[in-house]
Amino acid sequence: GSFCFPDRSNTMSEQLTLSAEAREGVGKGASRALRNSGRIPAVIYGDNKEPEAIHVEEKALVKALMTGHFFSATIELEVGGKKTMTLAKDVAFHPVTDRPVHADFFRINKDSKFTVHVPVVFANEAASPGIKKGGVLNIVRHDVELACDANHIPEELIIDLTGYDVGDSIHISAVKLPEGVKSAITDRDFTIATVVAPSGLRSAEGDTTKSDGE
Image 1 (cartoon, rainbow, N blue to C red):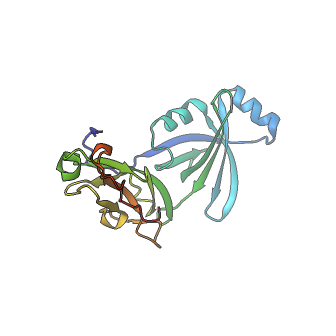
Image 2 (cartoon, rainbow, N blue to C red; image 1 turned 45 degrees about the vertical axis):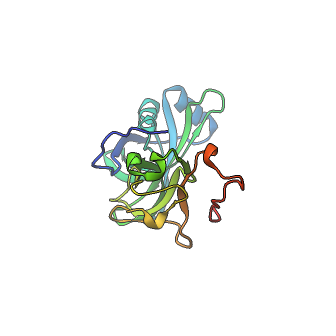
Image 3 (cartoon, rainbow, N blue to C red; image 1 turned 135 degrees about the vertical axis):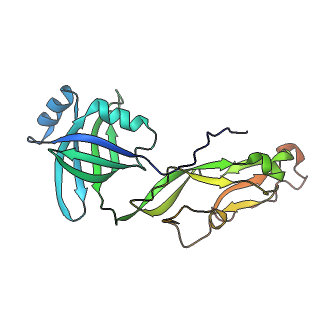
């Protein structure tokens, strides 16, 4: 299928900001009371410091989750006037209501290096001879794991399809990675997508394009 993507010249993730408050009581009762008042218990950990129990406003957390890049953006948590730069590590949801019930944030500093999963976006399908012939883009990985520093977290990885023909595979080595970003998987040149012939054009022997161990 052909996709239409808005032109995003700046694909670096935005920074999100959440104001938080220190959590006094711990335990199930205290957490339930917080949730009943529209607050979500959370923990900030990492950076060789003690974990910090906090709570954030549920509405603000849901709004941040709805941005679609909650897990790849840096999140500044402001607790009692003190700002902490973090990455969201996990959000637990209620199995029935789907409301968030707990969040984990990981402290980072601007020199931190870490891995994030970034969605893959394909561009210039019209410039792919294989797709022009009716070939199909077979996406092997919808996201890739990238190692990057805190100032260079890409929101998405754009893959240029120019020149790819039927039978071609797109490997991570062929993708131009943004500054400050490397593939987190270094032991193999994995396949992100292949251009395959439409089923009607396949030869009698069946499809001979083999994927390379992915």
